[in-house]
Length: 518
Image 1 (cartoon, rainbow, N blue to C red):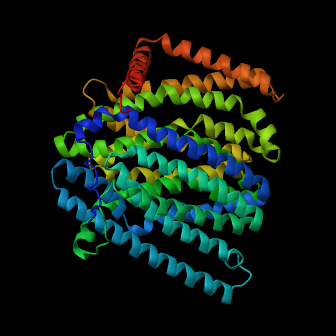
Image 2 (cartoon, rainbow, N blue to C red):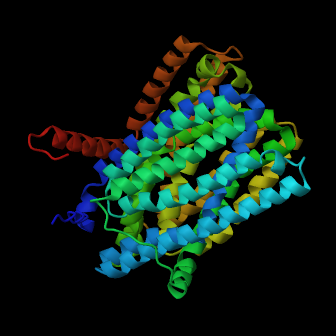
């Protein structure tokens, strides 16, 4: 008689904290491959669909973006509660919460999918010429993507809350691979509808892979439904979901405004810039995935916001000097990149440059929101982020009416993210014992300010003549040199760089050491 081996015991909280760097590197590697493959697939899809088709596709993607709210915050509660319960030794209750999360994911996704079928069927019967009816198959495909995506998110989180980031990294890399296969193939065979069907196939392929990969790593799981306990989880997780949904609204109103006021062609130009800027988010997302369970574990163990703030400060400060270096170099090379790979999208290069330069702002939001959730202050964000939505909507509408086009929309989007980040890190700074809140904000923003100033100087020197690859690469190299010299000229930032590089080198020596398991 054979027995399935028991799942390995997840690392203890202390062990997991000590392995933060390799975990971040694993996640970054997985996300890097996913983003690279994703960008290549986006380039292919953009050339296959054209500007207008790309605009429609960008709006259809919003179904997937917002569809996740259907679980009413249970997955967010699962992500928050299970690390806390495990750190307190309540493994049985943690397993029960996991089963309840699966039950809610299946129930809510099934109901939403059935509802979408009814709505689309009604549109085809009663309003056959409406956009809803014309794109009915694409819309249904995107709701199927939501179903697969919610389940895939749950199974992905099963790895991250146990600190199995190698498996999580594999899933992220696989996601990019299947996107690269199914999205361009679908767009080539069936236009926008084919792309939507390819997207659905990708989501379900990743979900199936996550289920298979969990065998031997995570304990078996079966769905449960307990109305009373689910209500408690909704009370915990719904405010968190509303915060993230509000942030998604704030970060996607730009596309809604451009689609309604400027048309699908301009939206397609803008969406390409959004896609490029999102590539830079792979490191912040990796940090968020790795530190989210750690922050909840730390809060569960100590109940001291200052300890959580100290834990989140380290990755934030690393982002504050690394990310502006990357965004500046990418912003300088955008002209030849567009002219070489996306000649039809060249009119959107300036809006893309603004979005790329502003990528630090949403990057800091990930860790900032994780911090607020960990210290149980997510309800405060229910006031801050809706205010940012109003600012974003009014600002985007105003700049379009004033004739600033997609460049103005990009600037308002970056400014909105900056204001929210300002609030989040002012709160984190107030919890730090060795840093004042305003000094914290100044230090986090200094690298971005230097990067933006250097890129503006380069753009002014280049004038209206778009540089080729040679001048752009030279300009990018000079930018990096000047930026690093400026960074090392200040004692505080020099100390950051030394500490971060020392940790990276220490990890590298550990890998090279004979007998190392990593």
